[in-house]
Image (cartoon, rainbow, N blue to C red; front, top):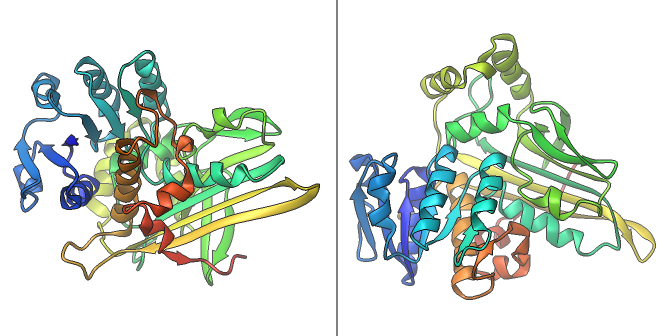
Length: 364
């Protein structure tokens, strides 16, 4: 399968390695920064230096490929998906942006090719887990999804290091958050709904952020009382972000906030990803709760060291791409993450990173 992969950032590089090393994909990796492509070329991966903001130059690159994988910042999602529709290319991306996903769904209507956005961790894998657990209940009461990409060794007052896209981080902190309350679809404010809990003896907080539910609100509408998604952080992070966004009014100036974060908050490859999904409801007339919990650590010892967020996000996308290639997903139109069968994903060569990760034993 011939893939054009746009973006050689942290996640794009990890995707290129996984697909290129699998032996089943021919990848053309495109980025505007030649340095970002260094060391990635190999027999099955061709690198191209192209300004990814120049859509006219991307069009001829995409022709002749079976699919485009978009690992660019979220604001490129709709333009690139539009190009994919024009050249009859399947489309996959990692976006967390709700408006972009809705626009891509409209593009997919009547298309001869497939469009599958939100193929990462959250949205992505976490929605696949939640939907799978929900199928085991006769009556759904509550679906809670909690995900965090955290530094293993926090060393600043934010208790946070940059582990993925700053654009995506600020976007999820600023946009309204979809949810279901008392059976009704609602929008919640980001950074609200603060809760505290502990996993394996470590204290965390969680609060509303945008985009993590993917299309689950629509899929489970009328079937569940309560559905929400929250990002997990170390205690105190949310309050400091509210100070920046609200009191310093940086919500109205996101570019300044992004610049501050890039200059002042160090990046790290030493991170941990937490995935916690809890579903409760009635089964055989009894109130039952099912929990899926994982903790995935960075891999610092392999030939290509990878952070936990690289591992989990790249694996999510590569696994659904593999399932699509094998005919286990629809061949055309809009594909929701919850159309992926969790057992098939966990059995997949890429998705096995979730099956083999550490299980969380204690929750308080």
